[in-house]
Length: 162
Image (cartoon, rainbow, N blue to C red):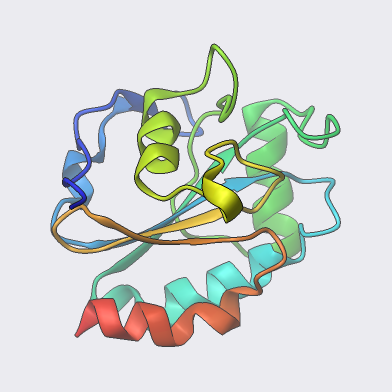
């Protein structure tokens, strides 16, 4: 039985403002580790499409830039924000760059990984654009691989939105 995740992990917006997930309690969340120079970077468009399609029904897509995979997110927060907006029209919330693996992994990602391990039960995130779907009660219901296209997640999202 999975327990609801904690909403009090300290996070920062891409603009550097401290916050938590408390503002998103009761919403369906799609939490993604992102990068600007990855083969999967065009998924920003698909993620934005999902956000626009379902945000009024309670979906929040949340992007967490990460530079742990091939050094594909070397930019500053300002550069990341500009890149996402200019190239993909991203309007969903983006947050401060984090580690998702290793000794400095952000507690939010440590929790997501333990609740939804990957193939063969491994917890480590394999690459950019791993996606975690969290239901309205805070339970991680599914982990999607980097190569899972955002549009392929629509049915799973619909089920959670009810």
